[in-house]
Length: 209
Ligand SMILES: C[S@@+](CC[C@H](N)C(=O)[O-])C[C@H]1O[C@@H](n2cnc3c(N)ncnc32)[C@H](O)[C@@H]1O
Image (tube, rainbow, N blue to C red; front, side):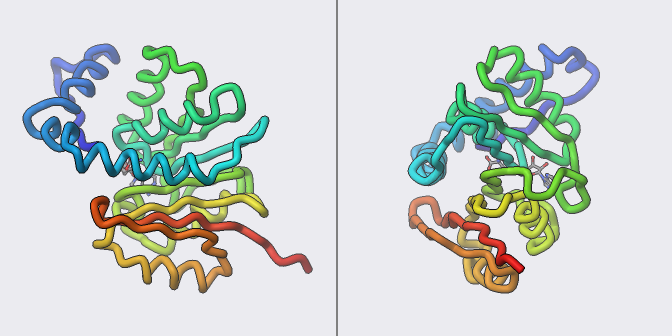
């Protein structure tokens, strides 16, 4: 999903910012794409990928890196409603504030713990999540491909999983090389020509001793 968050002297209160967000999702710039079959299909495909693999259990901890428009994080919170918790990380303070407020205002039953941090330098506790997701343009936007993946990977507990989804403009061989260099086990890989992208489900198995 695309949007350009409106800011400026007339967008002062959080409710005004939230209205700006809703309008930006549907405006003449982002709306046609967000309503298009391909955009809806990408969202369907990506959500179906994790829904078919994640095995929720009581107390499960999931982290998503890169909130963007927030639809993915909102969906993860739904998946874990009544079961576990989601931590949502983004470097952009405005995005973090608005996502936190949006979930509160919309009365999400299982809101995220929102953490405003640069994943490349953050101090989130290592090995503290059962599943870590990083999707779309987040890794590319971070400006440090392997550094971003390694920082996400650091958060996955032993026996946990990372889901990485990206588009073909970032060749999957780049991801395979990163995984091979760090001993990450790509358990499943799927690609789709309509999405023009792929997703990997990667297991963390630390060797003992
Ligand atoms: C375009 S969004 C895409 C992710 C989104 N979850 C989706 O549905 O596709 C990318 C997000 O990554 C965030 N981001 C970029 N670099 C980052 C970094 N170093 N640490 C944390 N977040 C970062 C950006 O602020 C932006 O909100």
